[in-house]
Length: 383
Image: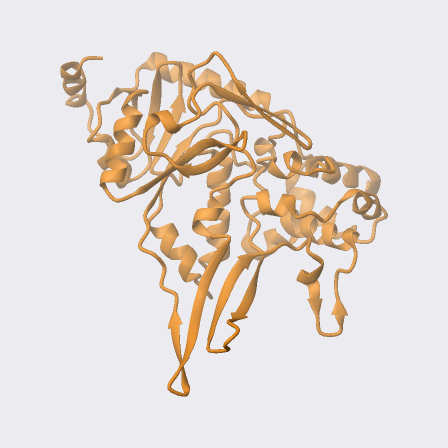
């Protein structure tokens, strides 16, 4: 579309929150440049170690155009196809939590000087992230971690500082993988709120829905046209097809917390415990898991020390160690803790499930344990 035509169309529509426009795919490059000019570190999907990872993107060419992913229990493969989609491949083991809740963070350091200790509290870096290509399930995961780290009784300074400056560009999921079960958890495949911009990728254009004032400001500075009825109809049909493609399900998810907590001593936990390796892959890949440990380290001279927060996992034997012994000494007990917390007591704590149905724990489990099968099987054997 010629620029003068775009300008003419722009005058016919007043952009507001909820407005839907279309942009040429090449215009996404302009958007990336704008964000970087505004001081944002632009993060998006890239190929790393033959999987989709999230890292800095500086231009459109950094995105994995033409790639699709094949996923199943304990299996992930990227394939170069004959399409031109930039967001056609499902996420790998990476999630956005590593930017908001870093794997390692120095909390404070102290140094002995003149017979005393000088303490330095870590101050969060002045980083602004623009997340580009956030799937609806991952947006739900970010909102869940908001409830964990930004509460009335406590606000985590690292997470809250990064989260307050984060700009989120969602990409609606038109090509879910076979391990997705977002429809059971109410987290996808389409985002309805909580974003600055939402993209739906069609063959030649992106449909863009504006979700915030920041989103309005960005769209005003790129070339756009009102979303045509034809584009909207195509997007609607593709979204309906996407919802039908999500065939993995959790039966009656609202009743899962009660069902799990009523069967803590069922023999089925022995069966899954015998297969689980306690490798922690599921918790590392999960976009909502938030277990951490605190490490204190001192140099050999004894005059400098620091405290660091690092990701941990409830599958690690040491995580449940305390004075007098270990409260979860077996793999069975640790798997039960993970699943009953994720899909049971999390609801009591935070008002919603800790699972968004992204399927990462299924894909990255070397024992091929499927969380949907475990929940549905436990329901069947306890019915």
